[in-house]
Amino acid sequence: MGKRLTKICTKTGDRGMTGLADGSRVDKDHPRIESIGSIDELNSILGILVSSLEQEDELKLTFLEIQNDLFDLGGELSIPGSNIINKDHISELEFKIETVNRSLPPLKNFILPGGTASASYCQLCRCVCRRAERLIVGLHKKEDVNQLSLIYLNRLSDLFFIYARVLARRNGGREILWQQKKEGL
Image (cartoon, rainbow, N blue to C red):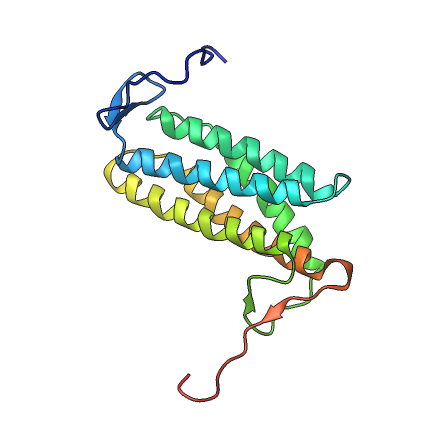
């Protein structure tokens, strides 16, 4: 890490602009900043999920690795033209999705977020991940973005869905199934 923040209150953003890691400045509502903010929000919610798990939970390590990857993705977005997320990141997620999904019963109905607090946090991570993906797609329409980062977020939201199912079923718990109303649907 080249530069460490020694002063937090710089006042350089008081006029609605912020600095990117390459030294350029953009409006705080720029699609790149919206994208970075969504990744930061996802990482923060994932931190809540991690803190809700027991200390010895094997998922903690997985989620902590993802938090580090998300921090890298935020860094990638803060330096236009950089590429940090790569095929290995995606392959690792795909392996986890396939491995964990094999242990789950097939879905026969839609499930609702819930079941346990940790499953709910995981579903919230999935939703924020999807929003971050949509924002980065919008950014990609205007500026060059690492295509692998979009694929990474797409896979990551799938992984959160799978892990939410695992967390809902722990300790004799169950997934909450959507109950379709008979009339009108």
